[in-house]
Image 1 (cartoon, rainbow, N blue to C red):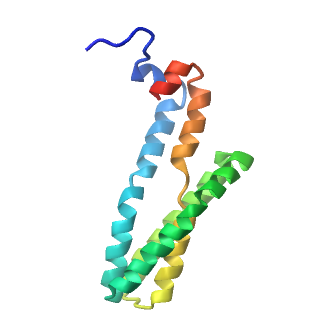
Image 2 (image 1 turned 120 degrees about the vertical axis):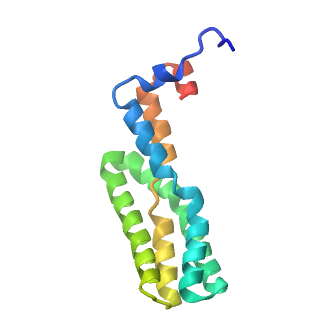
Image 3 (image 1 turned 180 degrees about the vertical axis):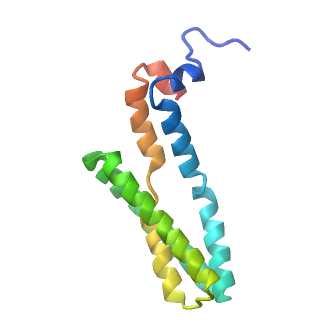
Length: 147
Protein backbone atom coordinates (compact mmCIF):
# COMPACT_ATOMS: atom_id res chain seq x y z
CA UNK A 1 0.00 0.00 0.00
CA UNK A 2 1.44 3.35 -0.97
CA UNK A 3 1.57 6.35 1.28
CA UNK A 4 0.09 9.68 0.28
CA UNK A 5 2.61 12.32 -0.76
CA UNK A 6 4.07 14.21 2.18
CA UNK A 7 3.26 11.40 4.64
CA UNK A 8 5.82 10.88 7.36
CA UNK A 9 7.11 7.42 8.23
CA UNK A 10 6.84 6.35 11.87
CA UNK A 11 10.57 5.68 11.97
CA UNK A 12 11.20 9.31 11.05
CA UNK A 13 8.95 10.41 13.92
CA UNK A 14 10.83 8.26 16.43
CA UNK A 15 14.29 9.24 15.12
CA UNK A 16 14.90 12.52 17.05
CA UNK A 17 16.98 12.26 20.22
CA UNK A 18 14.86 10.97 23.09
CA UNK A 19 11.70 10.29 21.03
CA UNK A 20 11.90 6.49 21.07
CA UNK A 21 12.82 6.42 24.75
CA UNK A 22 10.00 8.79 25.74
CA UNK A 23 7.48 6.90 23.61
CA UNK A 24 8.53 3.54 25.08
CA UNK A 25 8.46 4.72 28.69
CA UNK A 26 5.09 6.43 28.19
CA UNK A 27 3.59 3.32 26.61
CA UNK A 28 4.90 1.03 29.34
CA UNK A 29 3.69 3.43 32.03
CA UNK A 30 0.16 3.47 30.64
CA UNK A 31 -0.18 -0.32 30.35
CA UNK A 32 -1.55 -0.73 33.87
CA UNK A 33 -4.26 1.92 33.63
CA UNK A 34 -6.93 -0.13 31.79
CA UNK A 35 -6.55 -3.19 34.01
CA UNK A 36 -6.38 -1.32 37.31
CA UNK A 37 -10.16 -1.28 37.87
CA UNK A 38 -10.43 -5.05 37.61
CA UNK A 39 -7.28 -5.69 39.65
CA UNK A 40 -8.48 -3.39 42.42
CA UNK A 41 -11.96 -4.92 42.41
CA UNK A 42 -10.70 -8.50 42.65
CA UNK A 43 -7.91 -7.78 45.14
CA UNK A 44 -10.13 -5.93 47.61
CA UNK A 45 -12.96 -8.44 47.22
CA UNK A 46 -10.59 -11.31 47.93
CA UNK A 47 -9.12 -9.52 50.96
CA UNK A 48 -12.39 -8.36 52.52
CA UNK A 49 -14.83 -10.94 51.18
CA UNK A 50 -17.18 -8.14 50.16
CA UNK A 51 -18.10 -6.94 46.71
CA UNK A 52 -19.73 -3.90 48.34
CA UNK A 53 -16.42 -2.78 49.85
CA UNK A 54 -14.62 -3.67 46.65
CA UNK A 55 -17.06 -1.68 44.53
CA UNK A 56 -16.76 1.26 46.90
CA UNK A 57 -12.99 1.16 46.49
CA UNK A 58 -13.30 1.17 42.71
CA UNK A 59 -15.71 4.09 43.03
CA UNK A 60 -13.27 5.97 45.29
CA UNK A 61 -10.51 5.35 42.76
CA UNK A 62 -12.68 6.60 39.89
CA UNK A 63 -13.85 9.64 41.83
CA UNK A 64 -10.30 10.58 42.78
CA UNK A 65 -9.22 10.15 39.14
CA UNK A 66 -11.18 13.24 38.13
CA UNK A 67 -8.26 15.26 39.48
CA UNK A 68 -6.23 14.43 36.34
CA UNK A 69 -6.60 17.99 34.95
CA UNK A 70 -5.11 19.37 38.17
CA UNK A 71 -2.11 17.06 37.83
CA UNK A 72 -1.74 18.15 34.20
CA UNK A 73 -1.82 21.80 35.25
CA UNK A 74 0.84 21.12 37.88
CA UNK A 75 3.02 19.54 35.20
CA UNK A 76 2.48 22.55 32.95
CA UNK A 77 3.61 24.89 35.73
CA UNK A 78 6.47 22.92 37.26
CA UNK A 79 7.56 20.72 34.36
CA UNK A 80 7.35 16.96 33.89
CA UNK A 81 10.84 16.29 35.26
CA UNK A 82 9.85 17.71 38.64
CA UNK A 83 6.32 16.30 38.93
CA UNK A 84 6.28 12.89 37.19
CA UNK A 85 8.78 11.14 39.51
CA UNK A 86 6.77 12.06 42.61
CA UNK A 87 3.47 11.02 41.06
CA UNK A 88 4.95 7.77 39.79
CA UNK A 89 6.48 6.96 43.16
CA UNK A 90 3.27 7.71 45.05
CA UNK A 91 1.27 5.62 42.55
CA UNK A 92 3.64 2.66 42.83
CA UNK A 93 3.80 2.82 46.63
CA UNK A 94 0.01 2.99 46.97
CA UNK A 95 -0.37 -0.02 44.67
CA UNK A 96 2.25 -1.96 46.64
CA UNK A 97 0.63 -1.04 49.96
CA UNK A 98 -2.73 -2.26 48.66
CA UNK A 99 -1.22 -5.53 47.49
CA UNK A 100 0.68 -5.90 50.77
CA UNK A 101 -2.44 -5.25 52.85
CA UNK A 102 -4.36 -7.85 50.86
CA UNK A 103 -1.53 -10.38 51.09
CA UNK A 104 -1.20 -9.69 54.82
CA UNK A 105 -4.85 -10.48 55.46
CA UNK A 106 -5.99 -6.95 56.31
CA UNK A 107 -9.79 -6.87 56.17
CA UNK A 108 -10.44 -3.31 57.35
CA UNK A 109 -12.50 -1.56 54.65
CA UNK A 110 -11.37 2.00 55.38
CA UNK A 111 -7.73 1.09 54.69
CA UNK A 112 -8.65 -0.10 51.21
CA UNK A 113 -10.84 2.96 50.64
CA UNK A 114 -7.98 5.26 51.63
CA UNK A 115 -5.45 3.42 49.46
CA UNK A 116 -7.88 3.35 46.52
CA UNK A 117 -8.34 7.09 46.80
CA UNK A 118 -4.58 7.63 46.85
CA UNK A 119 -4.21 5.37 43.82
CA UNK A 120 -6.80 7.50 42.01
CA UNK A 121 -5.05 10.74 42.97
CA UNK A 122 -1.58 9.75 41.80
CA UNK A 123 -1.49 8.27 38.26
CA UNK A 124 0.65 10.44 36.03
CA UNK A 125 -1.08 11.95 32.98
CA UNK A 126 1.40 10.27 30.64
CA UNK A 127 -0.76 10.66 27.53
CA UNK A 128 -1.03 14.42 27.97
CA UNK A 129 2.67 14.75 28.75
CA UNK A 130 3.56 12.72 25.67
CA UNK A 131 1.33 14.88 23.45
CA UNK A 132 3.09 17.97 24.77
CA UNK A 133 6.47 16.37 24.19
CA UNK A 134 5.59 15.53 20.59
CA UNK A 135 5.21 19.24 19.89
CA UNK A 136 8.91 19.68 20.69
CA UNK A 137 10.13 16.40 19.16
CA UNK A 138 8.15 16.64 15.93
CA UNK A 139 7.70 20.31 15.05
CA UNK A 140 6.42 19.63 11.52
CA UNK A 141 2.59 19.32 11.43
CA UNK A 142 2.62 16.08 9.40
CA UNK A 143 5.13 14.43 11.75
CA UNK A 144 3.11 15.53 14.78
CA UNK A 145 -0.06 14.07 13.24
CA UNK A 146 1.73 10.79 12.62
CA UNK A 147 3.06 10.74 16.20
